[in-house]
Length: 133
Image (cartoon, rainbow, N blue to C red):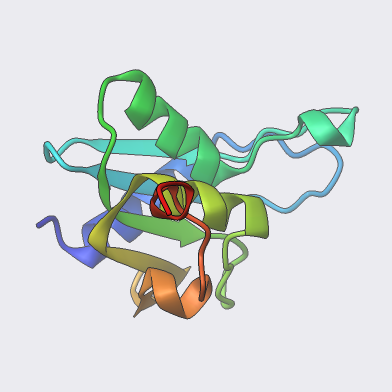
């Protein structure tokens, strides 16, 4: 498993590409796929706010579009000196592609981060298993 600090650093690299003319709130994400590859993403805003895409989904969709359907870890960084949690839609997308023991890493700065589980950030998640009941 790639270490958490590396994923946080990659998320900060992704954040540099954020397109944020409206919120001015840059977010970066880095996803570790099952095959060991790392995909980065940034938030991409749009004048039609509904067309905006979050950094987490950008990174996850890049992984999925390259054939990786399972993510083992995701690092998320926003403004310096505070933890940025994923929005509700991103939490649901993480749940869709998450490995059972996924690590959700929230970076406060490049050297300080916390690690959460999916159950901690999305208790009672609705998943594909619910559709099989």
